Amino acid sequence: MRKNIGIVVIGLSGFLLLIGLLTVAWAPGKLEKTPLDVDSVTRLEGTVAKVDSSTGELGETQPVLATSITKIDSNASDDDVAVWTSTSCVVIDEDDPADCLEGTDPRLVTASTDVFATDRVTGLAVAGDRYLPAGASSGEGLRNKWPFDAEKRTYPYWDGTLGAAVEATYDREETIEGVQTYVYLVEISDADAEISEGLQGTYSSVKEIFVEPITGSILNQTDDQQRYLADGTQVLDLQLAFTPEQIEAGAADTKDNIAGLNLITRTVPMIGFIGGAVLLLLGLFLATRGGTPPASRTRATRREPVGVK
Image (cartoon, rainbow, N blue to C red; front, side, top):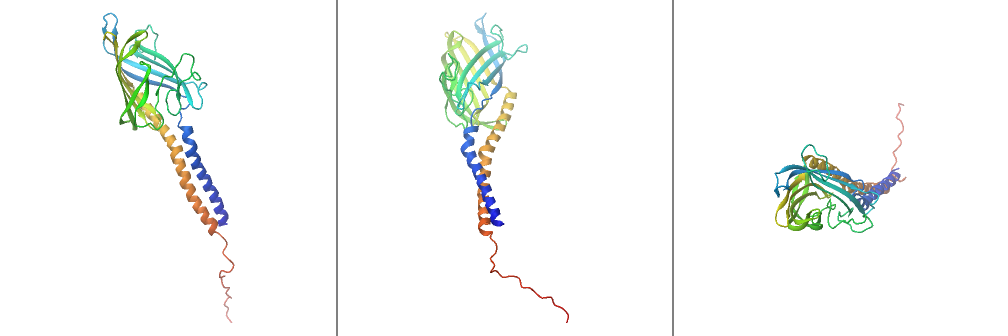
């Protein structure tokens, strides 16, 4: 009986070891990819001062709201590449504005729509007509997330105003809503750029990007931005950061994602390997030591009942 139980236990140990091996070999490649069902809204707030066309000088500073709507086109995407459509608007927070406004509305500060493709693992832009409509370009570098298992180093980061990749340099660690992040710094100073449609000038920006390194998710981003005409006249002074509600929601989602990744890539393999090894040893013990005692062993001596004569 013990021998049979031992064989069953050995079989169970093999199953656990196989589960551990499969999760180590298969899970990271399947789970550490950008999902194809992304449909997110990111909200920011801050202040803006823009040029007054009647005076040619910066007007008063006003509160602004910014909205970025990002979706993946699952039909255009594949196992390796995600194709994105991103719409961003910055509007003056006056009279309860919509997320985006018509171009003739004086409350509209900036608006843009972009289609691009990125590698689902590295987060880097992917070039090529295979994924994008005619005339669209992904540019270069990281676009809207960092790679899984981000490192403390410099990454190329796409700047849409410049139309070029710039350096995002690791600066420090910082905790946001209980989540440890890496902070990357992007600094642009007096760069030649198209500061508005058809209008050339110079552009400066200091961005801080707060990235959770395991998932590559951006939990906060600040931007201190200025734009000038060629003659040095300032036409825009803009400061933006994620809203507190956006940061809180992003941190909660990231905690859930980290927990799910850790369960599949760490906890399950640990249970598989450790549990499988323990059961294997137990099964071998039972299978090799569980035989029936040999017949030559001493038998109990039968005693005759003692009666009264």
